[in-house]
Image (cartoon, rainbow, N blue to C red; front, side):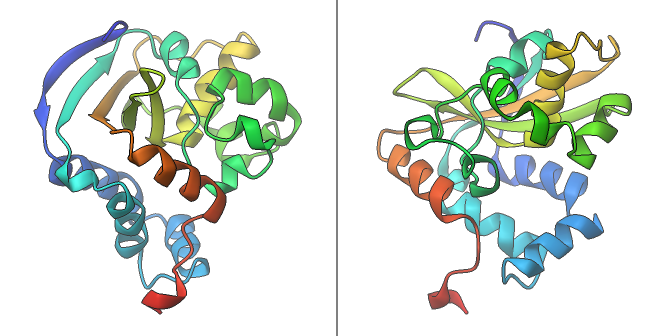
Length: 195
């Protein structure tokens, strides 16, 4: 893939372990899981991953050559909290750069994004899914970091040249596109049948 350097093949178990290490112990994410009706971070995140059968997909790890150029051109992921402000035809279809243009005022008050602008992690890993209909990557995990790169680019704020961003990538199939749409509209609240 252009703009990415292949590192190695991976597995969902490895990708999920990295996600867990980055996020599971953060009180804000634990609280978010509880508000959505889940007992813990892991069951919440597994629910989203299982909807797209991510454990059965082939994973590859890449290093992003130029994060501030590459990441803003990825598509915003299928999560209601980000997609609910968009028009129907924009849902799951906007790049991070396009999203920042539309939602600039709201993003400028997002505490996580503001904090990341000045303290972006030196090394981080995002999760992306290649959409077959657009041959384009959708961010599945790492939206705050991805939006931060787009906000920084829009405002001419250079992130440190030393940052290393890895991308775990798997291919979606056509049937997954309806699930993406459902996720963007329905959110990741615990469904009644699992309560």
